[in-house]
Amino acid sequence: MAEIKTLIDGKQVVYEGLFSLKELYRAIDKWFWERGYDKQELKNFEDVTENEKQLILEILPYKKISDYAKIEIRIFMIFSKLTDVEVERNGVKAVLNKGRADFSFDCYLVTDYEHKWETRPIYYFLRTVFDKFVFRVYTAAFEKEAVKDCIEIEGEIKAFLNMNRF
Amino acid sequence: MALEEPGKVEQVMDAPTIRYNGVFDFNGLYRMMYNWFFKQRYEFHEDLYKEKIDTIGNELELKWRAEKKITPFIKYIINVEFHLWNMMEVDVIKNGQKVKMVKTRMQIIMKASTVADYSQRFKESNLTKKLYHILRTKVIDKEMMLVYMDRLTYIVYEFHAEIKKFLGTDTSSNAY
Image 1 (cartoon, rainbow over the protein chains, first blue to last red):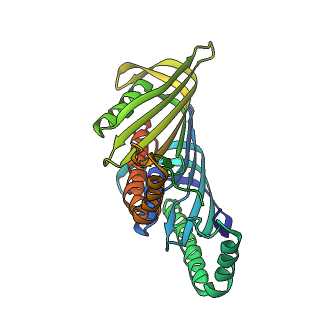
Image 2: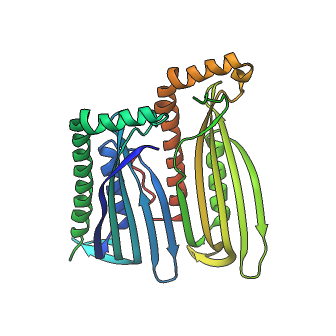
Image 3: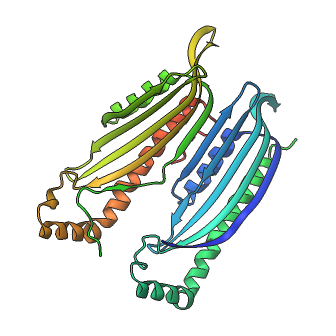
């Protein structure tokens, strides 16, 4: 099993009000694509009733920064009590969603994701020693990059949601 | 150290799951998905069709397997599993016309895998098995990962987006 270090665990963002779910999803997808992350959508659960809908979305995009380490950012989103609302902006009518959005952010640094250094105890020992003492500078740099990316995407989502505040 | 087996099915990605609870055109979705495989030139197999009739709504289970030989050595396999609960036909007025749709809870799970040496030519003897192991782990390892497995992952995500677009969800865009 690869070594997984949790850098950010369950950072929450909650928003209630108007927003465009379609545009938000597109913005998140595009953000990860622009930064070279690979797409991984684990869950997309939608519950449509007569008056409202609920959506649960879990994405785990990852970026292989070397053949030894990769960054994973997990975003768990729950959109509840969503209704369609027609809004006029600058004389143009647009359909937005009104409801509650809960986001949970986790960030992980996964090392030895190809499982090459765990087939024998001596390899595992060497891997741990090298990670902690020899490659400490590189590991710290990877961790910094992972945390920076996670905080940036959180900021992007907050900025996007705040744009729709009236 | 365990040798790589010729013809081994290697899963490429974590299975993305779609769950949808509402009213939609199931026949249209079925046709759209089948046509997608047909256009992409996959060999289509319906491995399971199980329907249970019930007064509170039918239960339907489907398992599809689509295969495509990319090269004489490598093959793609896409597995799609449907499970529908409490299926009931409803009449819906769409664009002024009465249309038959289905009200149900549906789950779709997609799995993608690659198979190297699907004809198992390297399974003849112990020597050829060892040669295969060296080929698979040292010679074509990066090519398998970067060219074939990556490409298959994005093909599946493209299909995933088509399904979400058909269902009319707000998360159907795909930047990739």
